[in-house]
Image 1 (cartoon, rainbow, N blue to C red):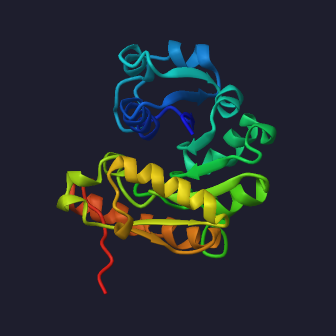
Image 2 (cartoon, one colour):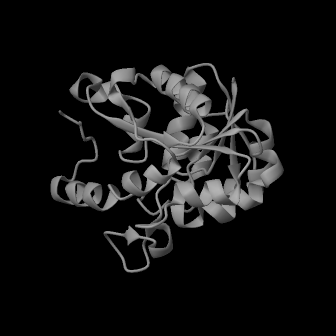
Length: 231
């Protein structure tokens, strides 16, 4: 499992790519149009520098279309904007996802009414993005995890509290979850801090954490926090 595809090129994808390269993985990021992505000088919605500036400093990362990246990866990470994830993954092509672990860290956020965003109605309460991905790509092994925190903590839990806080995981395939947990261990997550919530329907719960997370972030102006389950 040394080849990893990252579907999406935003800050979350860049964070994962940088970490995975340091861990010795072969990484390809996927985008809709490679030449347009490299030519764009636009900052992202959070004011971060354009992708081409980051890419110029990270030449060990390959760049291809969604389909090329998905075909390349032995494991595929979805880091696209959740409202657009299904369309992006369709462009990646089901045949390139079949039989593979599809690690989903996206959230179905609806920004149409401004900040803070709400959840996309069709992908909340009685459904979730994780479930919709699994239904759309039934031969993929969807594992939902790390979507309840800032991307810096996803790949470096020891940044706060000595790493003693909780990451949730869910999915229908036990072996796929075990392999994702192993990858999380490489990021620094301890098994006792990875809480398995069961099948992919539990993504309804973890995605629903985002409205709370966003309000904490708004109140503190600090994204470097996480939740810990105490019992």
